Image (cartoon, rainbow, N blue to C red; front, side, top):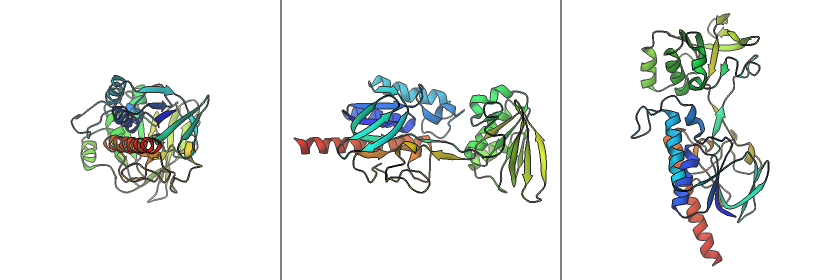
Length: 308
């Protein structure tokens, strides 16, 4: 029986682990991948985390993990299938075992949203990618496209402009949504063309991506764009499948909780991108983790006093 089990090892989960173990809790971090860090590992450069300007995302993720390791945090790689609320204890079911804890912090984060167009699934890993920093180097000197208009899409386009011969940023609206500083940086990239009011109708190719069928929303005209890769950055979806049976989700699948991370179920907390909130960034994820761990510590201490 653990005091706390943290599901997820991104910035939220790692921050929660650091605060939880410093608070004296017996805790375990369950991570679905063998490498801790979450989405930050796939970020080319983080330039908005205080005190760490222009930080490599992979390096930042490793720094968080090393901090937790130094404090003796226990990690286990396992895919969580479900979380069950038993009142004073929570049961976490993985593929191979059941684990119990007095408290749980849900820090599973969110995953990349899909376009849902023909060719996307078939060509994923063969020119269709959701991580420019992971796969961009495979298309060095070639033409590539980025789909989206937010921060992630702009960051991907800027990154790819340094290694691809030509980059097309495809956005369905008539203006970008990304931060002003990113738009300014994008404007300085001479080999990036922004295609406004445009949607992807189909991703073309047999064994590899060969092009896109695009639709101009202003004119209704469809046309072909020849490229070798398309990087999709159209948002995220919450990874809440394991808790879909619990009464803690909103209509979008995010977990509802305040700044303390407490859900409507006592002893169950949430942190990071999985929590319903207006801003999802590394710094807010880390703050969520600290708050949720603080709440879990208070809960455990209160229960111990009550039982004594």
